[in-house]
Amino acid sequence: GAGVSQTPSNKVTEKGKYVELRCDPISGHTALYWYRQSLGQGPEFLIYFQGTGAADDSGLPNDRFFAVRPEGSVSTLKIQRTERGDSAVYLCASSRAAENTQYFGPGTRLTVL
Amino acid sequence: AQKITQTQPGMFVQEKEAVTLDCTYDTSDQSYGLFWYKQPSSGEMIFLIYQGSYDEQNATEGRYSLNFQKARKSANLVISASQLGDSAMYFCAIVGAAGNKLTFGGGTRVLVKP
Image (cartoon, rainbow over all chains, first blue to last red; front, side, top):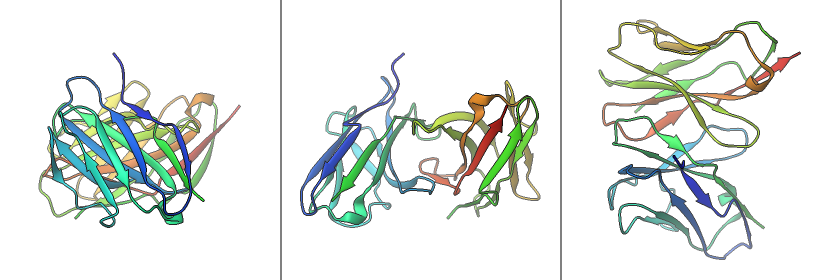
């Protein structure tokens, strides 16, 4: 079946702009996760959804970052007033339930100029 | 809180030989899970293998095996009969008792030589 998909694959924006990154999880997966991977490092957790609600948003770096999953499927990560330090690959993952293996999408490479 | 340490930033391995990637972890949870992911240059994180903290036998998946030593808090990945396509970054990760977020190590880059 289809894996996790993410759009866009690349996003270049200017400092101060607003961006939205989309994640479409594997069908039937109730848990969805966002991670951020800076160059040369392992991914770092941002937020976790169980169904429509954010069960754990402890990894969001500040209030410029926000994510939604209104219908319990597709999720959007929103970044306001982007800064150059936000440049990274944003990875989305999904799993059947919280304790199951997480399967990752191809990521969105965000570059803030 | 969980922590993963991967001390090998990069390794060369000859094609068809085995390679062991080190991973040590730290957690205060009694129940946890350990994962290995592969990340080729294309960027996608590919799940390889999983070991639960209460699993008595080491996990195996094809050419991948996990050498789980609970007392030493280590979860090394062994790749047997290396192939050129195994060249990639490899990440060890842990999930705690809450069962949600993965904590990753810094990764090990493997380059398989023909």
